[in-house]
Length: 587
View: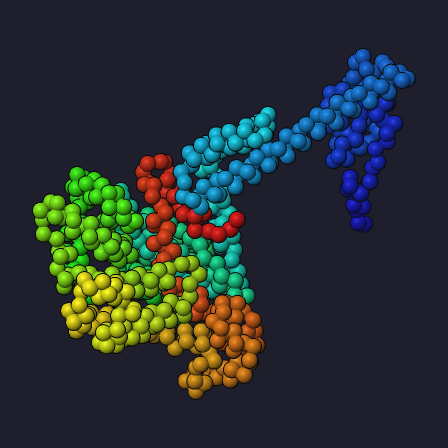
């Protein structure tokens, strides 16, 4: 015989009787319980016997002896007091929630700006002063916002954990592909930091870029050490390495060594353990471009330019006198700059400043009774060419930077620059200096004669650069046919495409609307997202667009992490939180 199931309390659907308020000094709460008006005790079960049993504890209380209207009036006043207490508590909780949200928002903005935690306290002082001026008397409404150093640190850590959980959810979602960008750098305390960024592309072409992990290499930075650090980071994040499509590094031997390099080890590991043979290794295209330029830059001219800068800036008295000279001459040009070989773009700017301030520099050298290299016409022409040359190079470098850039776009820009160099060479040989405005300005101002310009020497510089561009970028050349098929499928010869893609490629070329989007060079992600009729081509596009073309994200993050880990306990975790927030666009 089956036992009868005991009825649950919720199934009884008990209803509070208003008469119990006067009889037992209880009232119903918003949670469908009863609260005693005398002692504030909560009676969970709405039942007459329970209310009566509890009221027996207060039979000796003065309220229990009241009768008639006095009893009703007393119950009314007690109910009013309980409601006021509840209302005050609710308002307090609501106020605390608002203050807590405000605290998180301030912590987020401080993290994005890379500001220290203590700036929260300064912000609060400024906020209270602003409120005091605009809304006097309401300072107390804002003084309860928690913005102490410890609070801001905790808030940023919470935000970082939330961003990390969201990132892992996107990466580990079904059919999502991802790629890694790995770079290592040493901070001011000689501590080796390894940044691992991940780019994830879902089946619906939703792109996500964020910091996967920030690892500290305790001692050595060999390929084995980097391999273990990256493998552990992937394991902690529970990444499915079967969906990994590419790794982008800075090309250092520890990263790309043929036998002991990180990429070689990692490729062997995911092939053996996860059956993934599709890993694409790319050397950061910005690093390669910088190496090309470094190998052909006019080193003799740069050495003399740096000599001029050091003569003025290395001596504090000389620098003050030179700035006074600039002020007296009422020139609009800014002060002369130091050149740093670490900062690739500084070469062009420092050379440009020297060229623009050449009259003031010559005058300053004359006051110091020193010979100035700028008095030499050949040197001046070479400097003008160097400034124009580096202007074009720096424009290319800056165009390769940025988040969410695709390998198709960055490699196209490198190819475009190579074609421009060919055009520059042709124009130089024709003594046509339209693309070299500083050289043209010297000719127009009669500071140099057109016949004095060493065309052959400058052409050899461009030849050297073209040779470097031919030798390098081999990794991008290997996937150039694929990137062209993804970026410009309407221009690819159908017979040159892989056999399994040719039928879809024919259909795509006949799709007028889709071809127009490719011709207009619209967002490739959005374009391929709408190309659902061509699943094989769409899958190829997803595997290509997910790749990192550079380690720009790592380099940008290194520049933002300025605080040494040893200054504050647990700074390694806090620094990682700051980098994750600073590189995230979530508001």
